[in-house]
Length: 379
Image (tube, rainbow, N blue to C red; front, side, top):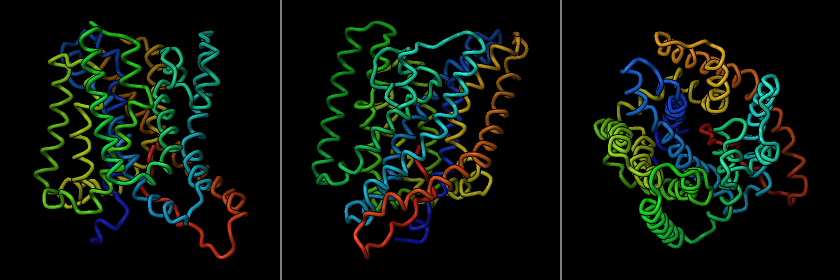
């Protein structure tokens, strides 16, 4: 393995920031009601499909966990308890902080949530429930963390599955989803909350993207597609994803076909090609500024929706200020995310690591401690 491949995958860290921006743009729904034709068209044809950034995160999560933990878990060099502790420590602190802040905001407005959803949300179990008042409760984007928690729990089992069997399971899952999407498209006309949940928020459906990430990392280790990892191919894949975002909206592709089917292939190819770090775009993504922004992407993902909700309701927006408001939201969200990462998240992660010895106290004498977690951390 070359130094570029053995080194931490810095360019993928930067891509995380760009994926978080896509999700941010998808939540600027007030632009859909703007009196500016340009802003309306920009949202309708491009920003609306920014939720495809979640597909990127799910695939990347499987890729990075496999890169970081597959071999150590298989060899028993790291206890499953330590792995699970690190994953929980990664997602729960900021999730609980963001949910708490949103609860406080709702209380001030006397706009109380569905209370049965609160404990499910805090425990990251809410994406298992088809009621949108539950799986989109409190801080809406947290539904994907509920999915991630399920993926984290399943990962130690998935990496012990025979490689060929996992590939066959992936293909079977894809066929089942395609069949289900065909049925949904034939019987449902227009928007359906249940179809939205089943193909967008339901953990078992989105598991396909996570497993794709596992298989993708193994392909990357084997050098699959190495000769294609050039700057031209990188640019082509970026354009392909942009064209897909426009096409699914322009041609009104049913939601059931979008994330696991339309967006998964180009997103997976993008991650594989950029993981090699050979092209000019990948080299550009290794810049220190983009690295810092990528490290703050998890905080950006969690803080942006409450910020958008607050500013939209209190800004007194009008026809001439929508663009300026969107820009202000972006700058504030990025600034708050960086501050949260530097002042809160990084310190919390360091503090929580101190409790790991309590979990390894029962390990057999003479077994070496596991290596530290990778630089690129999944959501």
